[in-house]
Image: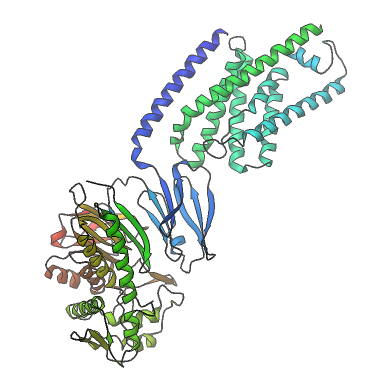
Length: 128
Length: 188
Length: 320
């Protein structure tokens, strides 16, 4: 063990403690705003994605047993329907959503994407 | 001392001549090191980490070894080659960015520390610093991609993993170094 | 008290139905509620060949159709509102709805003459009600009834009845945006119902109202539409001219005790416009409204001023 080692060791330890406490404080404060996207087909959950953890943009496709499909795109904190073979593509027109409470609906294919998490506004339900 | 280790590895005594042979053997050694680094890189790519693209940085251990045996230019060269080749094997643009950022920062830090402070710091420590900066580099790229500095929430976890892997690699490197030194002294 | 609700999401009446039911008997009550929705849909949908409405429409100009209590009641209410709104709500609008085909793959902008032709068939006065025999007849052939602007509201009221009969005192009914907040929340506080921002994506609200045991129904130009040459054609038709209603209003919300009233009035006031619409609502006891216009103004009736909270700064409250 050389004498510099101890100094580096202490510096690292200090940085570790600081970053740990900063991270804990942050995690505690954002307790309400996790961005979890829930994808449901006909009311049944088929996938959940933590949008916070998405770094690289990804895409995946869900098919119905009748051969119809929705292609979903995710990037950090956002999700959208990129393509679908429903007649009106309302779902595609909806664009990206990124906040709790928001929804994308593909009615013909019974696909609903919603973002869970505490809505700061405390809304129980919404009209449409 | 390290140059002597290399010289003996290349099969020459301290007073060797024959530039061409030495250069070829040096290239061979470099290639082998790049290959090893690449294999380590590809294997560690299979280890599930926080999000796609981020790596443990074990391949940087080879750069440390190269730094000790061959010098800083070679260490950087190996890192760059390993990164470029590694991205050809898959991973995409973001994986490439993570590797370059992590590799560069890690190597530069280790090179500087080794050059100026090698008498004050042991190998494991230098390696730990390299590993830490490897992860800092990766987090920087991630923060840039998602345009959100809050990614640094992952710093504690990455720091701990850096300290552990860095120490492990540094310890291995110093063992390697001691063994080679022993062989060298026995040889003479 | 058990505060975890029974949540059911299903697809009925061409839309997402979401039920959140609290109470010991929630499981059973929810199942019964879903049954009643199917039942109503089978009676009143124009998309179901065997429904009572389809049969009624097929016999237009020929004979009457005997109807179940539900269907007869709904048509009767529809006629009542057609009279009240002087034809701004007209349930015989179906020929126009079919002509435009919004929501189907046949949607298009019909020609003036086509619209003029079909418009002749739109007249609520041609609905002949026979309460003794629970029968309804349409006077002329090719006339047709569409309960689209009233059925969801009726269904929400029926669901509430089912829930109450099954001992439920707290629930949230959401039929594709037609909301009924039954009772209060389990902690005794009012429900917070978000009002959809007509200019933003689904789930983005421009404000909320605090209610207990009330129906909240919105009609908007963003629910069903198609775009041709940059112009949006939505599904709320003006029965007087056969075109999607364009008078500045882009969304109407009605708060009432009965959802059937809310459904009809949200559709009617959309067509009536701000002035006539506000006048009508202010004249009906127990019914309140929020109108939103394309210039981002929000009009709120007097009874709602204290419980409506506008949160989106892009919109301004209009003081009258």
